[in-house]
Image (cartoon, rainbow, N blue to C red; front, side, top):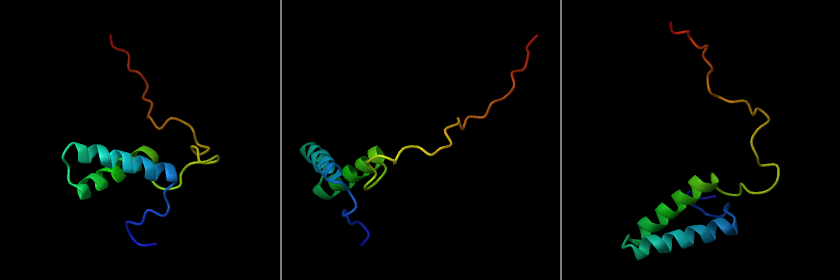
Length: 75
């Protein structure tokens, strides 16, 4: 698959990108820039192509990644 190909995206993601690009173009952004921004937005929202469906949730390690520090007593 060539770089920049949109084959791996779902129909919903393609529709979203088209709608977002139209909004940018209405605001005066060039067509090329609008498409680039639209696909960047779709990628940010969905994480890339073909990510929908069951079994695509978080991994089995659902523990918090935040470090826990013991509280120091202030006297």
